[in-house]
Image 1 (cartoon, helix red, strand yellow):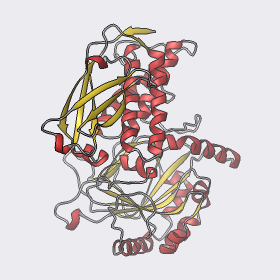
Image 2 (image 1 turned 180 degrees about the horizontal axis):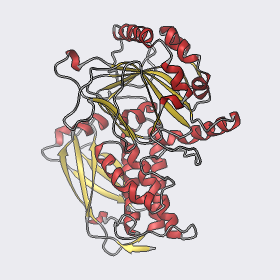
Image 3 (image 1 turned 60 degrees about the vertical axis):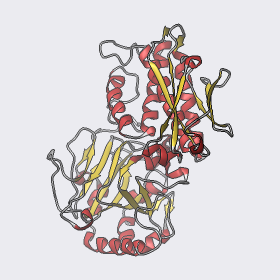
Image 4 (image 1 turned 45 degrees about the vertical axis):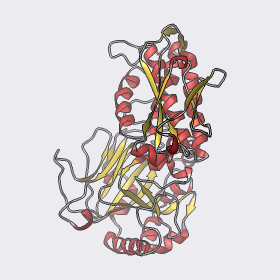
Length: 466
């Protein structure tokens, strides 16, 4: 199927990095188009006396020959991500007479998303973000051309229908691209498109709020929240001496904060003190492995101490909190999940003022247990929801209570927030929990457990790093 494009204006922001400030009053700007570049084509933006250039992808259905360009101050986010003070705004109309090939758009969108993965792995955050934005744009154009996102039309979903195949490819690519772009705008669009795409059978999910990289069908019940008494791991955690664990963990956290790395250090990698740190405002040069987690942190800081993770025991960290590690380690189900790479057992710390954006875990083959060790005094927001809480799926948000366990399926979209209390020092105490992943109760056979874990390992990078 093909169709004519509209006359709407398309724009792109190109970061101008280095050597530009001295020419801002009389810039020399040149925009050229590479028609032979793949998958769509590209534009070269050259500026300054030294003819520095920036190359970015550009869809073929946009009339670059009629483009205009101007200079603007970079936004705060652009300065942080691209280390630039100025950006070039390139705008061009869509081609009125150009025939859009929806199949090519879907293929190119997926190709751009894969390209973004490669750039992300190389630490090219700006390039990855641009590629993801272009992938989303291509897939959005494809779905609009097929009238899939129109509320009054129905999309065909026959496996033999080539247009439906293109629509399914574009739908999945759009959803994954929006997830990995991050930010509130992308989340808002994600919420808007997922429900109609699931309803039309174009996404392989039953619930628009359950979008893991690997969805194992037949695991019942399918629900965001679980009763702790129905999950052996939760029963085990509830039996532990949580007060002794809390004292031990807080002592280890205080010791770490007295060292070289503060809790808001800009990385989720393991530091010299064993803790992993993620902050909303990141310093330059963050390792690509932390990039996916960085997009989740909208504000504040999130700190973790992994105990059982990465296919084994993190012995140096377990020595920091031996009672906690022993208590968790006596539950074979949790350590088995960690040892085969399907999950982790960690201590998780949230500072006041932290907000984690909505996101989905890698698979529904596991459940997540939270044993609350320290939480702030109960308080309500203006909308009546808890000031420190977690929302899972479309269920009402829940607050943690010290010594109690929460159990949920993290393949459902979930988000976390901790609004500071202005009446307390530093906005309140840290929220501290012991987090353990355990198998979904219906995954009972060892062979099936490791088979599902292997599938998650192959697919989950697609969710967490791109």
